Image 1 (tube, one colour):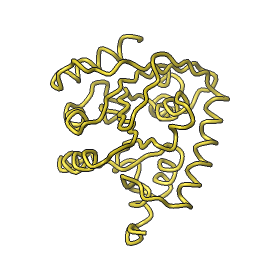
Image 2 (tube, rainbow, N blue to C red; image 1 turned 90 degrees about the horizontal axis):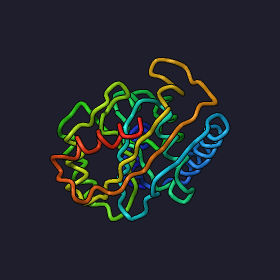
Image 3 (cartoon, helix red, strand yellow; image 1 turned 180 degrees about the vertical axis):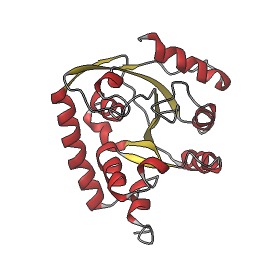
Length: 214
């Protein structure tokens, strides 16, 4: 096991994940519980073509802690264990309890948004991966609406297929700084791959896609 010299928090947040029978089993159980509760307490409406492929980057808007679970719940079960969700290291992986919750329930991996060198590191990581699914929130924050160009550039130039995802209704269902409000409707809308959109225009194209159903 090549990661035994790392702390538990580092192991929880690493990408690509190293197979670990204990953590993998805990993730499967926690994910099943979280998605079960998600389906009980919220009505999910899914539209658009469900993606498929070897290297898929689901690029979504972000306004609530429910966003990750909404996307996971919208996908077939066979994709759940494949997904890794980029999550801010300074928020989710500084303390062990939050790192456990993020990794086990939301499939989170650590992204250090405070360092520009992190983009170079992820560029190398993604280029080296032959398969995998990523859930990425390019805004980097629930309080920011527009996307960062840098992470979109890394995804586009690493050869991953970018699939736009618009999430609607989660802000009302669990607002920033507030408590969850159950029995709301949440929408997850998948778009077509932007094959003819230049990398420099991805940011504005995504912003328009996210706003189209609002």
